[in-house]
Length: 199
Image 1 (cartoon, rainbow, N blue to C red):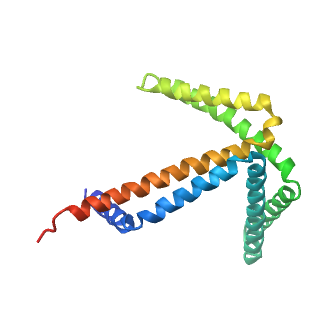
Image 2 (image 1 turned 90 degrees about the vertical axis):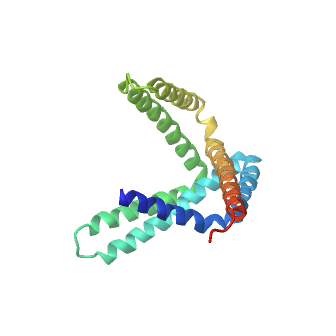
């Protein structure tokens, strides 16, 4: 009970600490909405940009893993970290060398993931019977599966825009979420400032 009250107190302090920063959340949300709008004007360019970011990230992560491996030289796990770093760096370099091919490949991976996720959600929903709401989980799984199959059927044509569309959707939803969160913080700050001070 004490731990729970301590958790609530620390959470309250954390929320209070960021209440004054609500403007930053709103500004970040507006920025993401603008970026999402820009990306939506050319989904192919957005797809290639996201692929290049993924490739560059993999190269940097691979280099860090290789450096980490040599810091463990002579210790157990050195070979694992070294090979993983080399593989990561090589994969990132291939993506940077041919982002168009990587866009097609990654879009197919996303489609396959949606199909697999749909099957797993449907299976999980049926295994939750007779719990309330199991039909919603099954319905969500079937919908995810159908979307995955539809995307697989239209591949490779979707390879040029799928990742860009996902980036746009993510930026827009995240932007609106940050704006809503920032405005909620502002409302909370206004409510607290209007309350009379206790002696």
